[in-house]
Length: 161
Image (spheres, helix red, strand yellow):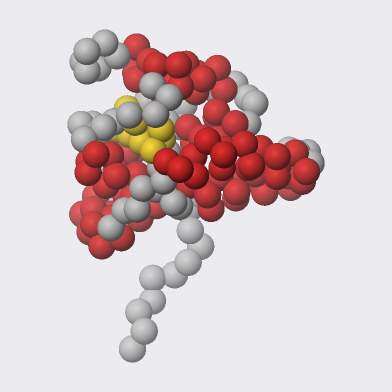
């Protein structure tokens, strides 16, 4: 069992340069679990591909349905207070923290291409390449894979008074 983050899901279901590597992760372990927020992150990536990469809305809906068919029964709730606490302690987004909290609670790896998570949570977060190459739980010394990053939020940090 692994926790699959949004970029792994994107690579698995949207054809691209990293799709083959995501498929190899699935060949190694096809028991993927996810927090419910995967839906929103994945749907947003699909929308971006409709707006910027020429993906047709009908195709996006079909891709979403395929991912939903695989992952809907594999969703696991995450305690948002644990995610918020972890996010604050390690300066990561609450979204990212949910994946880490889920991996920690299940004692399974989080497979992600997010280099920041790999660096901040080396006992829990591993790249696709390292996961596929790992034998017996020992991580080989190989370079990290490219990263998929969300844009920085434009929200302010004002507090209500």
